[in-house]
Length: 163
Image 1 (cartoon, one colour):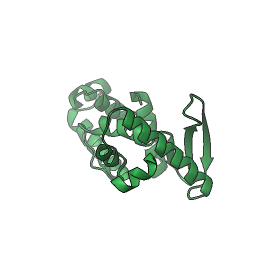
Image 2 (cartoon, helix red, strand yellow):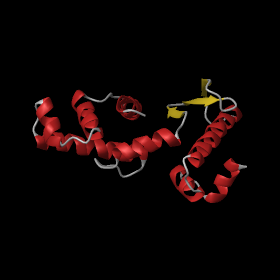
Image 3 (cartoon, helix red, strand yellow):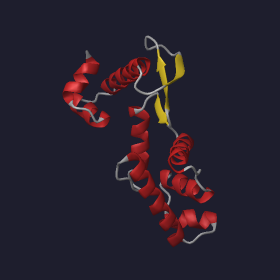
């Protein structure tokens, strides 16, 4: 996931939760944060004081922490979003429907479908995505324990996807 995709993802999540899109300043703060910029530099680019940018950035990170139920800060946001890309490989949940992208027989073609959550078809597609994610992480050399931690599942559940 590149920075523009991360910004789009965050904007969609925040708009879904709050009913409002990100402001231009919030986008600049997120983009700057993901690029490793200082609040003073972000403020200079946007005509705001460092203190104001810091306050808006803090509120934004608190909101994201609340949405994702994970303590997020300026230092761990990018890594968290990159992990979201791996973990949610193909699964994006918004509102009442869930979009799942998955490929057949590990080939390059993929298909995007929307499913009502908790239906049998949804569960089958989500399982395929999870299996594919586990296989990708195994190929990257991660141990079973590391994969279980990243996916936030226990080792017994992981063996279910490996069988």
